[in-house]
Image 1 (spheres, helix red, strand yellow):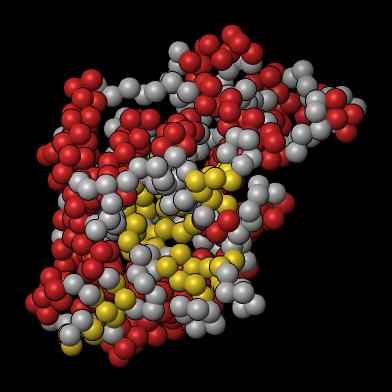
Image 2 (tube, rainbow, N blue to C red; image 1 turned 90 degrees about the horizontal axis):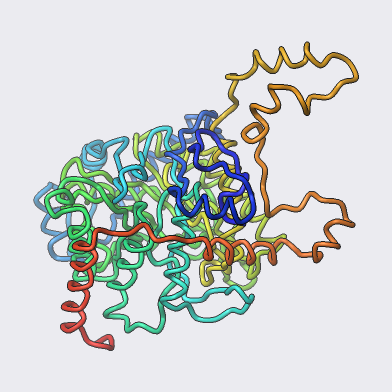
Length: 519
């Protein structure tokens, strides 16, 4: 079955429902791939601490930037901070709280993220949330359950799966690294794959100024150069090196994207207990300072440009030094960061399904649930790493990708809130059936059976006998089968031939100028 089988969710497009079998599959191939609109959260956020505690963390973060300062290791960045009135000593920038908060206040609370297919355009910020697949894995766990290096074919496949998954709102970009392609040329093929195999929003490359510029040039070919000067079409990730260092590579990427009005995720990469103090609240105070410094810098580049306040915070196993996913402290820190983001009226990013498990097993499920629950209830707007993540991000799994995508449909419905639209009709059905009857044949049931409840296809609810007769397949096996079937059903959302040719020409010309090895 394809990814669109019987997965009900709020506001699902009519084409999402279909019959099964070969006839149903042929029908779906001739219909547009379903895609859920921006998730508008209709459940309250959960406040884990009182306002006074949030204010305490805020004040300590401001004091860190005033007293300790933050490194900006780039000459142009230092010149911009000096011109803005910050206290600068070599590469150390001490930022007065009034200057900091004035710059942060210039970031819009919400923005539109455009897709090449306008029907896939989404809103980020406020009560809006989007789900985005993982990023950056050098390895894949493939359709035969082998762990190996990722290839361009794998990356193409993951972009196809992201396109077909209705609850994913973006295709990300480096879902897995195409390791056979030379590093200086790799970014061209990553962005081409994201643009070719999906028509959803995508993510940029930040590993050098030149690669960021190539990303913007390719976006300009697809969207039009004038359009991308002022309209957001991609999101890019920049990480502060905790503790308190924004390096030249990240600052170069910021300069390219912010000046093009493209949102950046300003996200410290914090291994709590190693690159922060061994304290959840202490880590949050530090990470908040680092993120705010990055957000403020983008407003020196282009005031009013949309940005995303971010964090990636995992605790470190004090026995081994290994990062851990899915811990209660990681969830608690999400709630604190969400409260701070609301204080600053900033769109914010967290991670949903990032786990330490090596396999798509019970541990992966426990970790995923812990973190996604916190991401939803803390009000995150850009929920990254929402499909495929295994092994602390070293591996992207086909089975994990497919099973995560199905679970996202459930989270979409959960966060959409409880609807009372059919309550009157449901009460009428009780009166129609009366005592000792059943509701299976009522008109209300016939009208609502497809959409009333989340109906996953990968979770097995059959009897033991039926499960055994059908091969006694575990969840991981069913996930791989689902991914394989999704890929068999894939049809490319074709680009205009002139645009497609423009991208091919750009890549060919760029590759002639680039070496095959990193110098």
